Image (cartoon, rainbow, N blue to C red):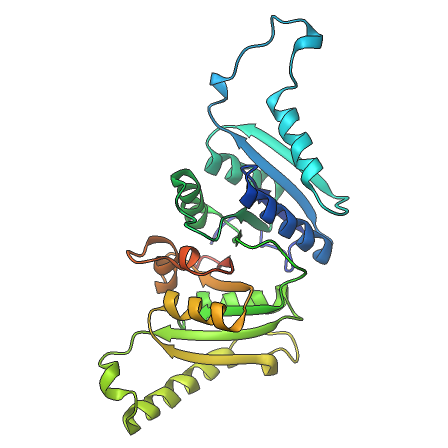
Length: 296
């Protein structure tokens, strides 16, 4: 088992990693909203990469020296915070962004990492994509990728499952994080010979079987009292990233949740799949729940 302390639910320590861009503003707004909702601490982390190339102002008179980069960054972050955030800390460190973030997660004892990502061509910036990929692989806690500017708390949560314990843990965490939100759980998969089975009795029987399997899967989930009855189970035939994305577009879900660990199929769709990844293709915010590492 991992030596990492078990993350609090809901999180008591949120860590926001920002590159000070527009997408970072959206993530800052969401992290601030979640910190208020959960009465949590918020630590904002920024990595200064290539700091050795900065000019050396030490020979100038003190009154002509610009503020240190770390001080400038902290001032900008604090000015960008909207609304009260009494338990705010800012950490600015030199080094590669993934390592600075992971070090901060360990040092701060964070329960959740929040990142910002644009909705359009989100992996157009290679550095951002590499940072997110590395955090998905190495972060000991769950990662929330923010694409949209928040308009209040999350109100409609979509959880994707593949019948693994990791994906069920994603459902459990989503239900505990957001107890008041509407919640849909979707199992999406590609059905062989789908065109021949759609309107046949065999096709309908197979769909009923899959729906029953999904309900049984949810029956084994540890959910807050009364929450199970408010979950809508859906079975869809098609690639998960396509079906989840279509649901978000048509039904207005503002958060998609995936419970993932390296061994399960959804992790590969999220992180290492050859086709469009869930994080890239779905227009909503995406929470990748880090399932507990199984015992060897």
